[in-house]
Length: 435
Image (cartoon, rainbow, N blue to C red; front, side):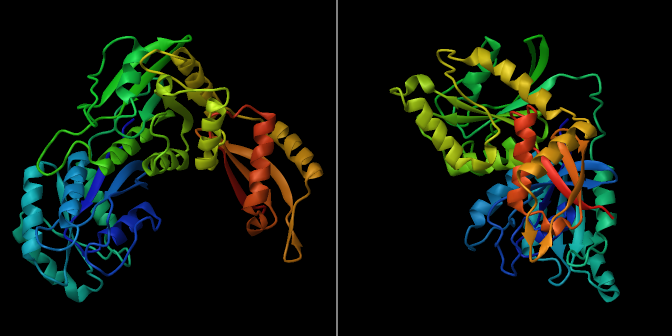
């Protein structure tokens, strides 16, 4: 199911990144008291009223001579296109500025619900100043303190009042997967080859896919829904080949997927953008398969495939659980392997292990490699149980969670992988005090 999406927009230095951090509950955005410090659009997920939603933090929208203004404006316009609701942030300390008016003009054209929040209302004396912002034409301005979190609940209530109703997808038990990768790695060609028909326009120009396409098909006695990432409708100063835009669309597709096919271009190797998108899929807990496309174009010897696989494992060390398949959309080489790999990854992502069996594995692991001692205090692990799937999530009850070092956590995860088939899926391991 596609998450409802909130875009936070406003001119520079009104506190957008602080509010983004408040909403998603982490410090994903760099916060600095300098206009225009947010260089990239940032994407996160949050929960309000037991419903999950996506949040986009933009750079400021401005029309002036400040550095990066053009890029920041483009980012914001793209985010506006992607949003279901726009949170327009202004700053009570400055009053209504010309830049606020310019942002308002952009939002008028967006034809999306807009919630207006007046930030930095940190005390009751400033609340009367909020009424000045009625002049922007977006209804009641809501007072907010991003630093202290005051008023955030009222703002999110207003946002949720404008979100679309939740879709009922209970009858759809198909395996949902997406093809993620940089422009021109061959995603559309792979879609066509997998389906055996010309479902998507294919071009050598980067960024030519126009619309999001969900396609259902059956293979290996299973039902699948293929989520193809969309390109960009050319509008204003936003261009189809915008790299950051493709990252945003990939992240939204990942949120809708059970399994992610990370598509690499064998001719071009691995780029930084590949790592960003793969890292998001990993952190989101999605099952992952690495697909190296255009393998037919590579001159090979007996070591070519092994060398390329070693490169992938070196660059994506955190994806050691992800299978790698070398394919060609043009010649259909190994494409028949993909449905089985997707099915296997989806099943492993939903695998449940009985607590009694888990603790047998745990006890054997403790005998092989005893728990470490930190500052004279030994880690003691009492019990392990599985608490969730998609991804498989395990809790170990210990005497002190701070004693479970990353290296020993990694050891326990490897023991689980050696005993059970978790190919293709990340594993989350959480330490909790027995008390």
